[in-house]
Image: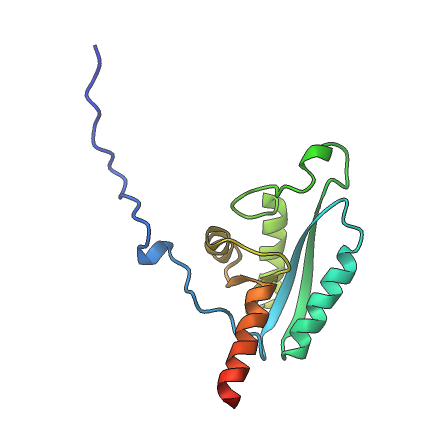
Length: 154
């Protein structure tokens, strides 16, 4: 017959525990070595200009760009309907591209990975763990620098 359900021996997942939270503080890019990571649809033709603009914006705030990683979706065969969607909701990127970014981060000893697009809290947490350094969106990195500068001058 039917066996009663046994107690799961894994620890319960509780949202908000310290091991699952990414600090709300954003990476300070001034004086930091950063990787720039971009995820673009194959339809987006100006991806190189967007990466260059991100590099300039970070360098203007004192960061040193030590590497770039680009993931383009829909460039090769297949998936025209899915071109605007990320490969993974957890990482945006393919697993191979995340490994490539982690290897580059180790080789360059980068302090942070700055993603050109927006990241969810879950993506920040997962990518921070996989890359071995804080993963933040470009908007968050630039906004925190601007707010810190206005607080210091006011």
